[in-house]
Length: 345
Image 1 (tube, one colour):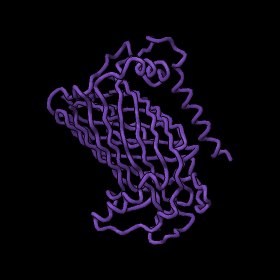
Image 2 (image 1 turned 90 degrees about the vertical axis):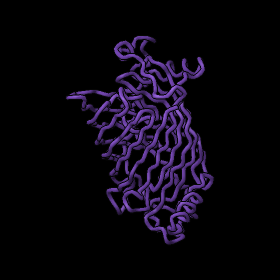
Image 3 (image 1 turned 90 degrees about the horizontal axis):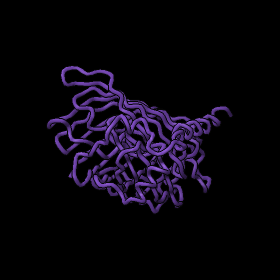
Image 4 (image 1 turned 30 degrees about the vertical axis):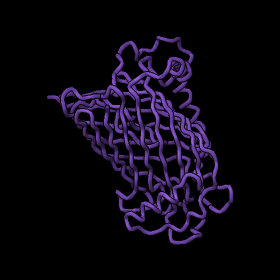
C-alpha cells in the first residue's frame, strides 16, 4: 500500500514546488532581474513537428505512435491572456515576455498481441488520444516555463484505429485486430505545468557543457502525474534552446528555439526522467472491465540523442528507454524513438 501512496505524495510535493512563488509579489522574480527576455529565431513564430514511434526500435506495441504539430508565436498574446499567464501561473513563469502556442496531436497505444480480436486481458489496452493544445511559455537565458491546456477525446473518436490502418497500408504492415476492444469514448483534459533551468558548468574553445533540470506536473483525466528530470548536453551554442521537444506527458523541451550566434549550433545529450503517476486514462480507463491490468505508479525513462540547428531550422533525434507502465508488461524495457523538426519564420 505504501507504493500506491507515493505518487500522491510526489504530486503534492510538485504542487508545492510549482506553487511556491504564487504568493510572491509581482516583479520580485530573481530570475527576471538576472536574465533578459530571449526572442525566438523567427519574427512570426516557430512551426515544429514531433514524431515518436517504436518503429525506430523495430517493434510495434504499447506506446506505438505519437504525432504532434505545434506553432509557437513570436508575438505576445492579448493583454488579458498575458496578465492571466503571469498572475495565475506565476509559479512556472519568470517575469518575462510571454509567447502563445497552439498544437494538435494524436497518440496511440496497442497491446503486444495484435493478431486476435480478443487479445489477452493482461495486455496493454488499445487506446487512442486526439487533442488540441493551447499554451503560454516564457523564456529567459536560464529559465523556460510552460503552461498548456489540452482538450480532446480518448476512444474510437480519436481515430487511432484508422490512422494505424492507413499507416500500415502505406508500409505494407499487418492489420491490428484488437481495436474493437479499445477504451471507450470519453472527453480528455490535460493541464501541463513545466519549468526548466539551463545551468552551464563548463566551456572550452567555443564548446560548452550544461545540465537542464526540470520539474513538472500533469493534471487531468488523461494523466495525473508529477515528474522530475534532467538532460546533460555537450556541444556548440547550447543557448539555442532547453532541449528538443517531446510529446506530453514527457517533460522535455519546447517548440521555440533561438538563432545561434553564427550559422550552426549542435549538441549531443543524455537524459533521465522519473514520473509518479496517480491516474492514466489509457490504462485505468477500462470501464467495460475487459482488460485486467494494473498501472505502475512509478515510471522511469533514460534517453540519448543529438540536435542540429542551422540558421532557422532545427532537427533532433533521440532514443528513449522506458520502464514498465503496467505490472503485467512482458517486454521491458520498452524502447522508442523521437524525431523532431522545427523551422522559424
